[in-house]
Length: 240
Image (cartoon, rainbow, N blue to C red; front, side, top):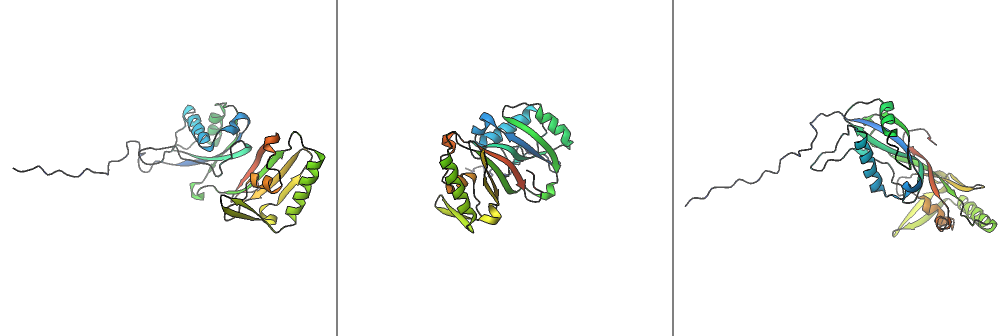
């Protein structure tokens, strides 16, 4: 009795959602603010929010390949939970060539609470993915900030500025930063602490690391608010 020979299943079936080869891709850089209660959503939820905003705005997203295609979007830096930002960056891609002004207008009509669209500009795909160069922060003073706190914080800042490097332990690894080049601004002002963190080749400091170095880890618990006031990308002039 002969048996019918079975042919192996082909695994080359293309994704039903795959965009046709050669579909145009146009990249846009969106700068936005994330404030209020929106600071309490995770980075993943923020990405999902942007996808929903794009759907509501009927954006012709350029999609990734595979069986679970997603809109092509990239954030050069994830914002820590609970931190507000006045200047975040999102690179997104469309399959249609829209004027930047049209995309800005379409995004601004969504009126998502806590999300403010500051600007949109078109960027060249040949530039590659955006890379973070530096971040500016402002940390409001705790509600119960005293003269003793001010004296202690000022002394801690002075001590850091007189060191060549500072180091912190993060998940069992030591992160070291050169103070002059990677922490060029660290000042206590009348109503806030301001800092500028420049990104190095390896792991870089975070704003919470700065508070730890100053002995101010508990400031957020005492009512202080951390705000990222500006982001600079590699290859661009200082944005804020």
